[in-house]
Image 1 (spheres, rainbow, N blue to C red):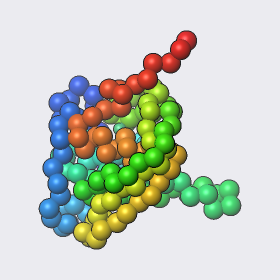
Image 2 (image 1 turned 90 degrees about the horizontal axis):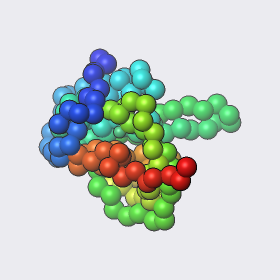
Image 3 (image 1 turned 90 degrees about the vertical axis):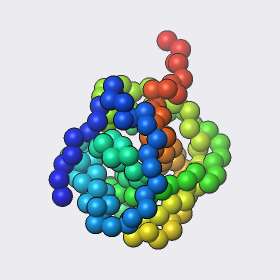
Image 4 (image 1 turned 60 degrees about the horizontal axis):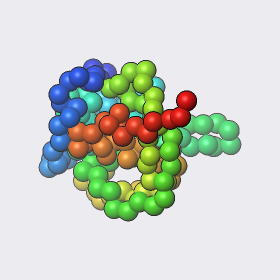
Length: 157
Ligand code: CO
């Protein structure tokens, strides 16, 4: 595994649409492993392949598990994710590893259902709410070249 460079805002690749993953092979495993390591190294909540310069439809998001006060993060990885359903709305602050030190309010669904594949090409379905729903939407946007800064809701001063 290796820590990869995180692409920063201003780089055109962040505005490009990522391509479907067609081979669930070692190359994909290495990419996902490196994304985990990179995300852990910088303390991120999620990371899309495009953010390490690879235009593939895949991302990881951190899921916090509260095991009697001992909060332990693990990563959910989704390949070729598709938003199947969404409900409600939430407005909360977001940030992005590709846009350092900027945090802005964005409106997202409160609940989402996302389908996709794991690294082995097996179909998965994720139902999420709150923070995880927001994180999934943020990463889904990355795969279509959309950054959260395009969706900012101005706050009253
Ligand atoms: Co981001």
